[in-house]
Amino acid sequence: MKTFKSILEFQKTFSTDEKCRKELEQSRWHGTPACPHCGSINVCRFANGKVFKCREKECRKKFTVTVGTIYQNTKVPLTKWFLATYILSVHSKGISSLQLSNWLGVTQKTAWFLNHRIREMLKDTAPELLSGIVEVDETFVGGKEANKHKSKKLGGQWAKGKTMVFGAIAREGNVVTQIIPDTTKETLINAVRDNVEEGSIMVSDENAGYTGLKHTYKHARVNHSKGEYVRGAAHTNTLEGFWSLLKRQITGIHHSVSPKHLDRYCNEATYRYNRKQWAQDDRFNNALHQCERRLTYKTLINK
Ligand SMILES: [Zn+2]
Image 1 (cartoon, helix red, strand yellow):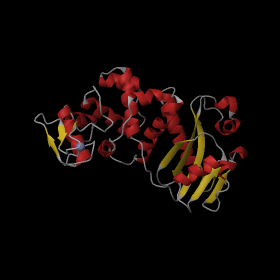
Image 2: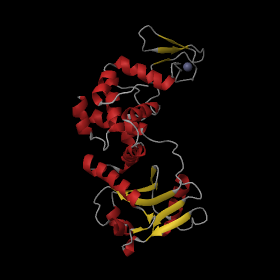
Image 3: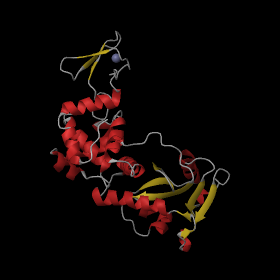
Image 4: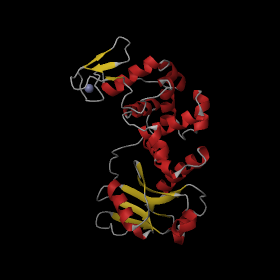
């Protein structure tokens, strides 16, 4: 695991594809290469140092360290992938595909694809349940943000083209987000149960969808329609803060985001929020550690 204190150091550390490959091998295999097709460690490395072959009779497949990772089947050099991974895991607000294309010297289409693949990599696949005081809320993302609390109830025409996102945030901890199809009681209750530990103190607004959980959680409510935003510990300000961060990233950097890709933008914002105390090299190393994900171009454009 490499350490570096600045982007200059980062670029020096990973200045060639070979250096990147070595780091990826270390991060993924810890010195013991394993066949990504069958899992066997009975493998040999070809003289070029890059390609491996599985020795298992039933397998015998060739592979490189990028097979089965987010970096598989790409014509973009690993040095550029690494730099893009660094920027997305470290930069506090993320980066537009136009800006990334200029920085990396690739087309905007390629940068857009890189951005999405890396966001897939930043997903927390098994986040821990939140506990303590946990604020829960749902919001529409996309379009105009005027008069949020009142508009939330309007739905219909106002909600057109917007995506509903559920969020939960521990006052002293992490945030989780989840795209939800509606705000029925059933959907909201399931979202809370999936993400918040039983017995926690749950703070919500007046949305009736959250009632019915009082046996599982200690429930405090804030009545926004009465202009009530803070009442002692009963407020949802931490989550409001995260929502505005997420929305600023989406409208400020990417301008508009198609609903089918929204979950990945949430991954990116959530990843950085939950690691805001971490050092830059730790964030990058952690992202690299999660490289065993796939997102093909076909899946991306057809979803
Ligand atoms: Zn194999």
